[in-house]
Image (cartoon, rainbow over all chains, first blue to last red; front, side, top):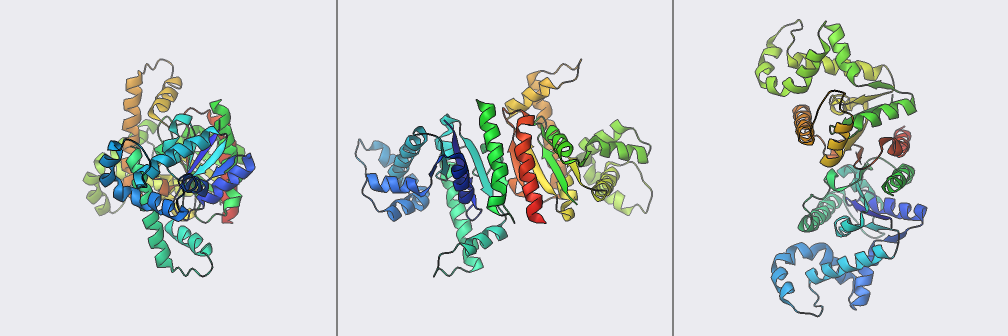
Length: 205
Length: 205
């Protein structure tokens, strides 16, 4: 089983790298599919699940921690339970076959599966530029807003990761390859990453 | 001008990656050549230069700092002056043409030349194994000794780097690519790194 996890700074192009790797390798690709699956199984709104997972886990964790583990069953829609559900689904996806999973602390959650862990990052200037380029129509985002959004989202990612791992988010030691996309076209660098990943899997056989 | 700098944890195989990249690309390769050149120009023993640069700079820096800058000329063999000389020689090498430079904080020293900065690392277990495999004949090194040596050397590298850069040694943000060689054969992963580096240079034109 070959699993690639992609952790990335917001706006670094990590999702595009993950998608292109999956396409090239013929692997399944999971990103928003994870949230969609949780929402589907529990008849919840995707947005609700997404926000609860992305933002509320770190805030609600200390409050819910004790309560959750004293519950004896049944799903209540707390962030912690959503997080547990997410863990379960990520493992199900991983066991279904070769795949690329973007975000969701899959590098930590799937460590027992010996995944290839990729980290993608870039300079703030480069991330702001990418954010503004891909802003949805009608969305007016200033450079300052974009920088604030990037910092906020990455800070949440860091916190969530820190809850379940001793190696800090973005610390090279937690990854097999760290790629700086500053000033680069994603499609230009994917072939090198792909060759590296293939060599890594081959050497692990 | 294409310049690749290789920074690496001791025992991670970074030097081998650098050498192979230089061979593949037909670039000049500088590693011990830098110390040899300083020694030659100033009629010093290579070992003396090497030890002074590797170990003494951080220890002697605070002591020599004031003195050095109040000197009005002439080379005295202090570590700081050797470091300055090293900086000069690294820039001369860089200006002589496409090259790979291993270690010596060349990533920082050559920042104005827009080099590709590679960082190579590995787990402690993997580095100890590599150290023991390449130990010179007659050198008896225990696993514990090797681990201590690795920690000592990397700690010196970190200190020297910290003296001349705000970005900590080994922090992803200071590099364009960070490669974890744990459990890998260097020669297997070089083609992927090479392709990545070529794409990087092409996109920077």
